[in-house]
Amino acid sequence: MKVLGISFGRLNQRSDVMVKEALIAAKKAGADVEFINTVRLNIGHCRACDYCSRCKDNGDTEIHCCFKDDYHILEEAVLDADGIIIGAPVYAVGIVGQFKNFVDRFGPSHDRAALIEENKKREKEGKPLLDERYFKDRYTGYISVGGAGTHNWVALGLPMLHLNDFSQCMKCVGHIDAYDQGRTGHPVLNRELMETCAQLGTAVAEAIGKPYEEVDTWVGADGVCPVCHNPLLSINGTTDVECPICGIWGKLSVEGDKVLVTFSEEEKARARNTKIGIYEHYNEIQNMIPVCVPKLQDNKDFIDAEMEKYKNFDEYIKTV
Image (cartoon, rainbow, N blue to C red; front, side, top):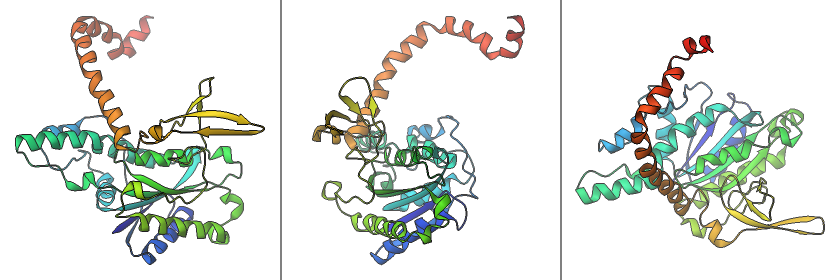
């Protein structure tokens, strides 16, 4: 079993230290470990060119991005891993942008529902199947690192890290909100924090190889959502509330000065990182096609005429 540690922070600084502490514990628990710091890697943003989709349509066994940067280094490392621990800094309320660049390029191209359906089609046609690594269950752990002592300045750190789970249906077994680092000075000065990092590494390593339904381990704050354990809720003016990360609905109630939120087993089973959840999104996209394509065809001339001012905006705006 292999646990991959990824740090999106500065070399040998806080994110590195905490991820490495987790990897040391994972190694002690019997895992092979690998560490990658991305700060000097060039991972550009997705340009929606659709090349990865064409790889699938062309019958390739592996899905690749056409851009020649360092994205593939991280992609291959993630695919080879059985467990993943990510540490990343918060610069402006949410996680550093390089992490989002990777998720945007890795997630849609490795969407498990789409790849399962592609493999079904290939099986029927007797064509080569996709890379087996795309269908491997993985366990994750996350560490959000922030300098601010006021928590709302780092509030989107952990929620953003959980975006990594969805496309490949990974299961998180713990997360750490390591904020207030400005006053801590250095993570090794906070022994409780470092011990929690070690617990996270152990939890990821010990979960590997077990079915998701048999693992209920959690390291870190409980939060509100029973799946991602984040404290965020979307409120629509009723007692029906939604976890904006997992996309599941719960029922809110108030007892004295305590707010309680309960989530049914049915809702938990359709969280974004589950097979049910990822298929909900896959079917939503597929169902858009028969609506969108005829609309574009029927209105082609009108759209072409309207687009002239947008394509030639610099000239057009002078006439307004």
